Image (cartoon, rainbow, N blue to C red; front, top):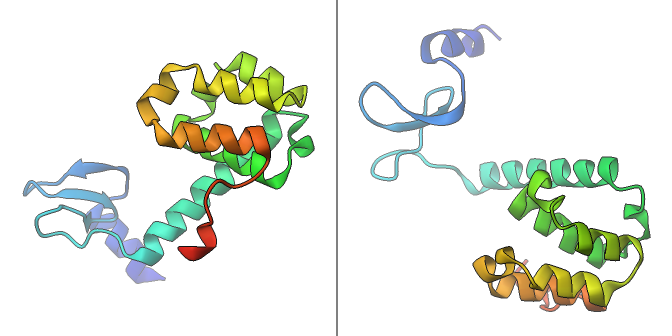
Length: 146
């Protein structure tokens, strides 16, 4: 489509947010996301980005850990959440927790995640995710929020 190529040429294509020539926070192809008077993102766009990020985290976990299939879906979801929050490089620093997950020692894995700077930074999130790893069960009924 010529219009798309023309807009890309005129606006430029940026993969990261930047401040444009008139001081507006902008992303992509000229999308003004400035909090004061920008379009921001629609719910559909937010979900699109979220689904892509979840897919990326899942792919990273599957390609990194040969034992990942041994996790229950709930424990896997907890690990995806942690990977989403930390990024894979920082998650890989949790060697004791990851080794415990591999050994299916879920109590030790949960304890190791809780015994970290990350846990103090994210508070209740770490408690919830560690309990999911420990018990294999969601700690909150998320069906009420859907």
